[in-house]
Amino acid sequence: MKAQLIDGKAVAAQIRAEVETAVAALASRGTPGLAVILVGEDPASEVYVRSKGRACEQVGIRSLTRKHPATISEAELLAEIDALNRDPLYHGILVQMPLPGHIDPQKVIEAVSPLKDVDCFHPFNVGRLVIGMSVFEPCTPAGIVELLTRYEIDPAGKHVVVLGRSNIVGKPMANLLVQKKAGANAVVTVAHSRAKDIAALTRQADILVAAIGQAEFVKGNMVKDGAVVIDVGINRVDDPTRERGYRLAGDVAFAEVAEKASFITPVPGGVGPMTIAMLLKNTVKAFELQMG
Ligand code: GUN
Image 1 (tube, helix red, strand yellow):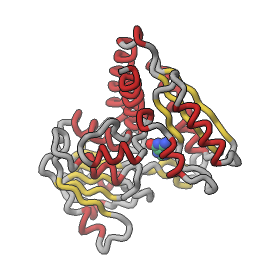
Image 2: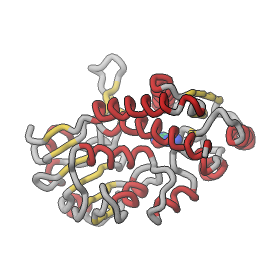
Image 3: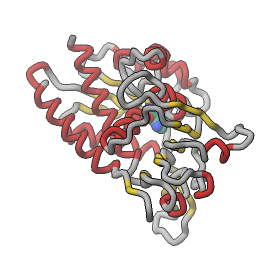
């Protein structure tokens, strides 16, 4: 393998230790709190929500997990968010996505107070991000910027190709990296499944961020020699040789791309752990904002 591994697990552990120190330093003013709402029984979401709760407890953040059956009405969910908006114990509120079909996710996103919006999903916070005046930064894209920074990979002047245009990763990733500021200043292309020739775009990338949600979509011949490759994908692929019946695969065909890239993130242990670390950071930021 030619590429150097970007160890997200190690960087995330470092950030969690930093957050733990920050939480201890704030103790005289109170305890930051994060409320997580999970609707339904999506197994992947249950794993994420459990990890978030555990991560909070490890760094001294108060954690509340509210689980609801998939049959909860939209009105009931909105009422719970409203109560949490007014609850001084919880400074951050996160509603795990996706939601069941009868609930409008945009209504839910806009019900969360922008001051408690640690996901940075509310249009107020998205707008602030786009104009370079962010309050919060969205966890996964911010985690990727943090990885690049800590590995001294400066995106300034580089061509970043973001594969995928979701509101959770692709769009905010592009908006973060295009900003006129340290750790950004990139020239950004957002490519997606409707591109006429997607490989022609990805081959131009100095830094390729794959967030298209298809297992091993990015092949070796889609990557320029020496590119930095960031894999956001977490896909379950059937694997009868595993006890649990599946394995996790990223959006990048790791083995062949690692022969061409200069740096690459593994799955698992790359971007994933960073998302939770940045969520903890945002919860401390929310606490500070609300405590003045
Ligand atoms: N589902 C997948 N990723 C995320 C995330 O970062 N936040 C929330 N709330 N739901 C998600």
